[in-house]
Amino acid sequence: MPLGVRNQQEYLNDRAMKSEWVAITGATGFIGRSICDLLHDAGWKLRALLRTEARASAMQGTVDEWVRGDLDDRDSLQKLTADSFAVIHCAGAVRGASPQAFDRVNVEGLRNLIDAILACHSTPRLLCLSSLAAREPGLSFYAASKRKGEQLLEQQAGALNWIALRPPAVYGPGDRELLPLFRLMAKGIAPVLGNRDAHFSMIYSRDIAALVEAWLVQDSCPSGVYSLHDGRMGGYSWHDVCAAVSRLCQRPVREFSVPPVLLSVPAWINRTLAPRLGYAPMLTPEKLRELRHPDWVCDNSAIQQVLDWQPRVQLEEGLKLTPGWCRQLDR
Image 1 (cartoon, one colour):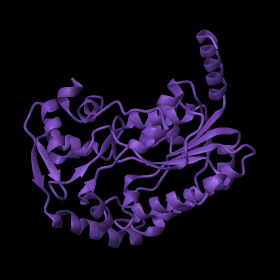
Image 2 (cartoon, helix red, strand yellow):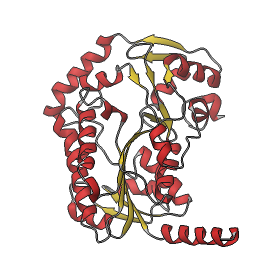
Image 3 (cartoon, helix red, strand yellow):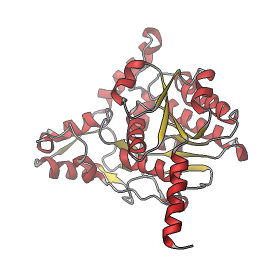
Image 4 (tube, helix red, strand yellow):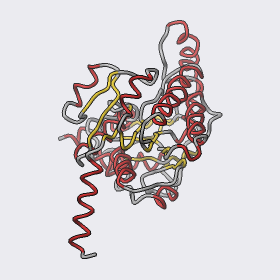
């Protein structure tokens, strides 16, 4: 086929694909917003699940249609997934003090979504954000719930076209978890919660969004669980991160080993009081086990073998693109 005709056919196929709905949960979260921004800019038609109207105001013009509800609401999930070409599942529980707090969203919520997808007239494909923590389910309730969610998907066999992604530490514009740490490091202090020799992979949020679009435009992708990172083999050490921050902020950054008791005591207090006071804590003894684990390095060769995707941004460049943590960069 002549090149011009082939390109025209690809263009027509692209337009037809993007005229169909892409459904997304967790659209207003950190990673979800990054995905929505990129897909909107690329011309995809987005329909998103929404728990409260207040969260939608910041994304006006990005999402084409909102469906009010949550992962417990089966009617809303049916409206969300109806006539969808694909479903991107970003919603999840990251705070809690009991297995039930995580399982209700990360396991039962996913089960409800799968049921809605399988009830569709034409079954959409599913991309589910898991977590690298699922590799070590014995560390925490959160990690265990994420692994249970992956097992739910694995049980679908040929009934569903799906992939689950295990991202490592994610950072970028809009991040609320790592940004306070980077702000402290910009002042010259790097608190190390566990072993100074620990290594961990990282990824810039926009690279995850680019992977999602690569998955959308590809005709097929083998179902399975895939890890991903920013392309740095062997991950980062605390020394690597401190060196990057030091160069960007033009000041020395010193590592400070946090005494275990400084975090263990408030973690146990959270565990004791959370059920009585009805709040969902981030810091618990189980979360500390995650944070202190010495090896969160992952390998992204499997996902690169099945998708036309390459991570573009490593840590130092990603920090330059992330506002609000270093005054020298915001000037």
